[in-house]
Every structure is written in structure tokens, then in C-alpha cells.
Image (tube, rainbow, N blue to C red; front, side, top):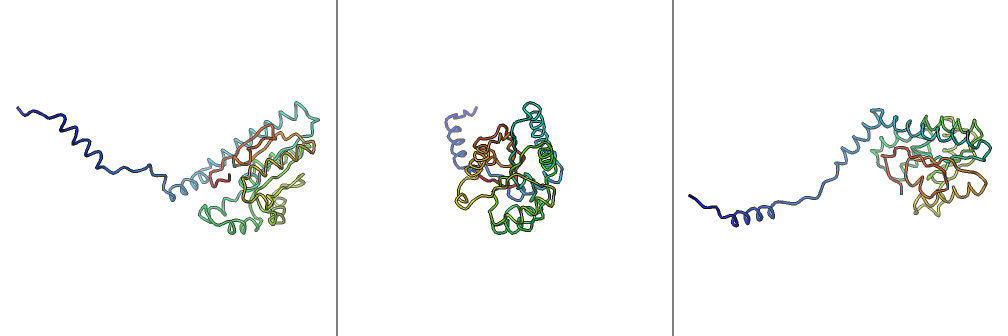
Length: 220
């Protein structure tokens, strides 16, 4: 009968374990990630998620109007991937591109409206609720942005704020918080703040924040 040396076997297993390569957990392949974005959009799931978030925002606004209809109410909206869609441009650029390329596309002024947010906008305006756009776009995009907004149905807004140069290298949250603070100092109660990036919502000065899906890029 052959006796097994348990200690010897344990040593062999340990050596084999040490010899085996150890890999970090590999992130999802970039091409697959981009394919997942296209599928999310083309499947209709993105639109469903947008619609669900917009319904939450609209119901909150309706409730707020019924509770205190005489308050000086306002809502704040981001623009890109909130009020207007850049999806066609982003897809054409492979969900990348330089800032110059992105701004070039935005300056064409042909982005379609995100319909559920346009519906929210129009409901707000019809009920004497002020609407302010607070965007991370640069001030030299004002003409194209205003034209684009009006062409797709956003009309008679109460304010349109662009990110000033002094904030270009800073978090979007700092600039957007500052603007919301200024709006409240005008006597408005911001009942809704809607955006696709968390940085659109951080910083307070709004009763309710509603985040739309924002998988295409990240703005801190």
C-alpha cells in the first residue's frame, strides 16, 4: 500500500497556485460598452426610463401647484441629454470626440427635443411656473442654443445660463449651485431640478431633484 505524503501534496498545490498567473478583473471591452449603449437606446429602454423620470417630475410639480398655487415657483432644467438630445452626434463620434468636435455639432443647432421634458416645460409655462435653463455649454454657443430651443418648442423661458470661463476647469456642480442660489435670491422657490448628470443636481437650492438616465458620458 502506497502511503500519501499529505505535506508533500500540499506543498505542490501551493507551488502550482503561486505559478498560476494572477489577473486583475478586466473591465468590459470598450467596443462592447459602446454596443450596449446603442442597444439601450435602440431597444426603447432609454426612452422608457426618460419617460418614467419625467412623469415623477410632472407629478411633483402638479402636487406642488395644488398645495401652494400662489408661490413664486420655478423649475431648473439642464439642456444636453435633458432638454435636447445629442444622441445622433454622440453615436457618429463613437461616443467620444474632442471638445471642439462636440461644440461644433452643438453649434449646428439641430438637436431634437426630449419630448417628455418638453411636455414638462410646456406644462410649467402654462401654469405660470418659471423655467430656467442652466447648461454646461459655453457662452459662445448662446445663439445656436437659443435658436435650437425655440425651433423644437421651448419658448418664453425665464432664464438661460451658460458656464462662464472662470468655471471651465471646475466641477459643473459648483457653477450650477451658484446659479440656483441666485434664482432663489430673486424670490423663486425651485420646486424641481432636472438633469442627466449627478453634477446637475448636487448642491441643493431645489425642493426635489430628478435624475434622467445619463450613460453616454460623465461630467463631474
